[in-house]
Length: 302
Image 1 (tube, rainbow, N blue to C red):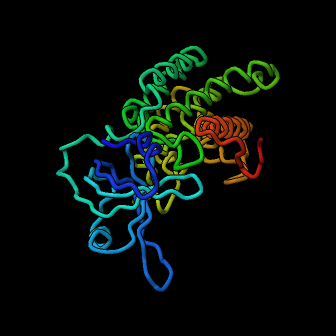
Image 2 (tube, one colour):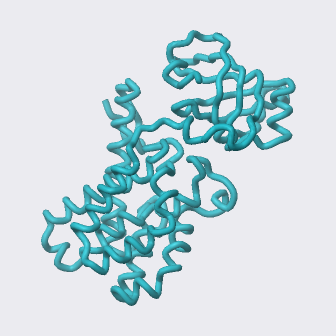
């Protein structure tokens, strides 16, 4: 299999064959009233692809090839130093022939990150808080540890969601201890649990980092509220009703000015640390790619 790393060593116009996981694509208008297909695939890293015309275009326009492992023929397209693939031939392989996870970049050891998150919860939460964490994640852990954290801005890789969640929880449980007056008035369980659950809705918003189905209508915030509501009686019994609604506030309001304005101090604090961690990760990834100047939410960094 040709990988993203292999692709970087190829020259513009070079033809090759490989297996790839087709993540998503859409038909877009081109010049002269023509159309083309614009999409993303996985070959141990995300790579953009295009299909311009012919039988391959007609096949993908007629049938949905997203979330399928395919054998492709393509050629390298280089523009401004960035490489993509122009697909000229494609054959979908029988489902079960290959595991889609084999085509994703394994940037994070997801089990290690999960264990580290559990350790943070055990260390920073009350016994009741630990029970709530274990109950909420009991049936979603397997999906949670492999899903993407985002489509492109930060940790847009398999396992990105658990990595982002752990880093956010690690930061906030350390930072809050430096501010004793906040700790006096905010239930300590809210900091750790709030961080752990703030993005749980992404297991329904994303499928291998692709937004599909009902996620085209509502965001992970709404899915997160739906998920947590299943455990309302349990959470209220373990803590109280206000605690439950403050957890909901973190899920709904953690986007800050980019979404619903925070009404609870915990939601505002999680929002700020969430923004900080995702921005740090975006900068870190830019240096990993060799980009010395990046734009993060309109800030120019050199």
